[in-house]
Length: 75
Ligand SMILES: [Zn+2]
Image 1: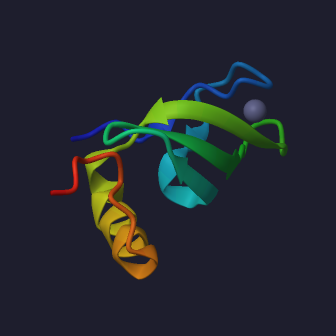
Image 2: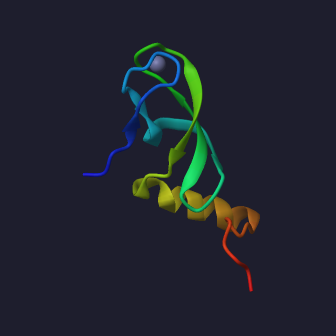
Image 3: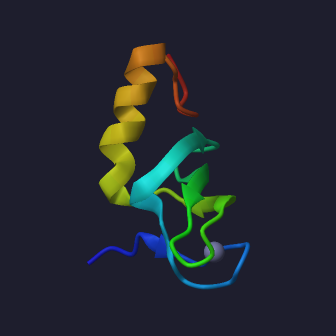
């Protein structure tokens, strides 16, 4: 089972579920800046995390919508 819950940079609790992100800015083909709501402290926080495989369809769909290369070399 893949890990999608990461440590909250605000309260330190491991309660930030990347699948519930409110925004995701892709930085590379493995990392993104997530903004997500923490169930533990109730804050919306930003964190750079490895993109969970379960979110790759979101990434690819967003990329195709904006014609982005997503960090890959475009021939
Ligand atoms: Zn928190």
